[in-house]
Image 1 (cartoon, rainbow, N blue to C red):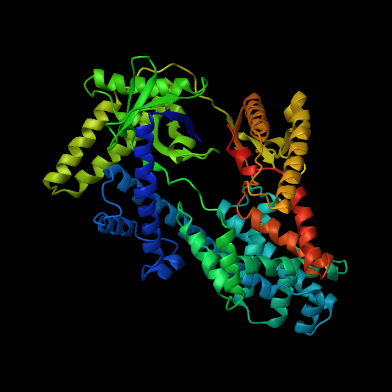
Image 2 (image 1 turned 120 degrees about the horizontal axis):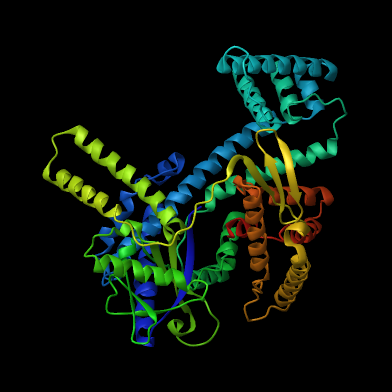
Length: 597
């Protein structure tokens, strides 16, 4: 991934910080809250939910209407655009997740209907278990023969046969079995297919463990319940900076009795939910929305479109200073050349102003820290990488011009657009001066596979994809080397913080009891990531394969709850067991490790 995010602290006088806070907290965040509410109350909301998408122009139309509202007037144009973009992003992601959850729910319900014990399958089919196994073996043989025939027809006359991994072959077989189940009405065939699917597309000669099967089925039921709850209740919510909703719920819960368990849970969720105390960030999607310069003391500063009367000094780590110097150099080169260079080749791609929460008493603009997050394209740091980006953009622009001319009958606006594209094409062929560094070229058949686990955060294997042979392994101890002792220190720290959190919760302290981690875990992630990349470069690997983390939390939670229910029928015992089990499971942020660079 060529784009990364860097950050710096923005320093300005108290008046500037106050003006910006009031714009973001009193105007922009309430506008975003109102936009989120309007979309959730739209007549077509349920239709959008099932389709998994919605027309992005809807948010812009609502925002144009709300601009005249006295609560939201007086904001820079960029702030309205940022609010529209953010709400579009939130709902676009949310609708995709809801559609995926709906598909998962339908699939799991279907699987639950098919998942029966051996005893139930024998009873339903009306034959013995041995006869059921024979029927299952016949179906399996037929599907394997059919699969081989399709493979040969695709590859021609028995020439070279594609080598499938066991996992991909098993997935294809499972897909065929599900299809066969839907296409048949024969009860015996359906029971045989169910038998194969629950046993991993194999014939199980051993007697089924009733306890394990019950746990497996219960885990599936829990997953279905959790998915239904997500689909029903989780609608994007804004940020309640004034805690007005929390106070309103307190009053309602104090003077009323809940009508049912669902309402009680709703109140509980509202009271326990910790809404952010900080306003939504403001996004600057184009790199020319920010103007870089140096003040009299030689410090890099920045101004933003819509806030041009205010300037902010950049304070960052020395390891990131070169990026901000590059932002300044790019703009100065473009300005000095009288716009003969294109901003599409700026190393900076976009920016975002946000507040970071800090502890203390006083005005929020004095307590909290103002931060700028910058997205940069690492390829645009070097000449070789810039040429790669330039070629991609040139092809894209040329394709756009060709398609537009092919239509013919262009109006003035379309002709002006083509003229602008031609001008951009000329400018991107005038590259910025960059340092030289050869691009990394790995061998496509050499793969680095990373496995993530509970006790071992990461293990590695280098594999030759052409032969399927493993070239080398690396355990977590080998990856960290002399720094392996830091892993034990991190685990002790995690346990200590968990203990402190529990004591604070038991004593019901008035101070916040969120005991965060130090940067030790992040440092270990950085060490692991660097070593993995170094090994990949040593063996000239073409790619690094990382596991998908989709639904990992849901799977873990469902498994924990299923195990807890088998441990005891008492609810308190189940909760205690689940709590202890979570302590051992949730010991690492795998997403943070994958995102490390």
